Amino acid sequence: MTEHDSHVQHTWNLTHPVADPITIDLWTDGYSVRVEGGDEQSTEGGRKDVDRFLEKYALRGYWVASDYAVNDPHELEPEPELPDDQPDGCPECGQPCEYKPLYDSGTKEGPAWLCTGCRWRVWSVGI
Image (cartoon, rainbow, N blue to C red; front, side, top):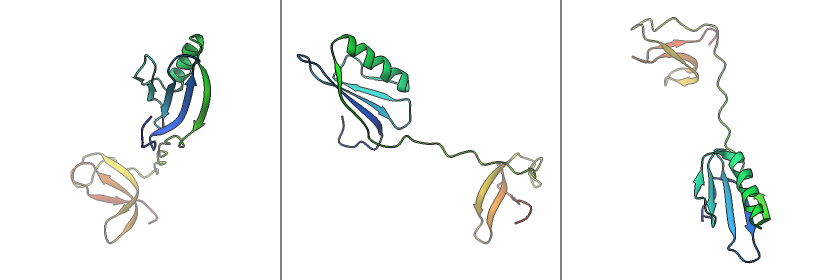
């Protein structure tokens, strides 16, 4: 549907004996769906909407001429496991701390708890 398809996970091309073709793209985010040539423009329902469109257009005499994977779906980074040594708060200002599995201070690198306020560092035990 576009010249750049890095955002597209899967494409379905529908054809009809007398009507214009329809293209359905499922984006790599897993929920954005774009339709070109049909009476729908775009939705945010993911694969459920793709299946609904395929059924809807099949009832109107369309069939899938081709479908193919374009790019792998976007996968979110897994949440890092938090170590057991979470401080109750920043020892300098008392604000909550967030965990960074790989923090580089310029002189030291490793897992650290960082204050969400003053960014004071508490290095994890064993580093």
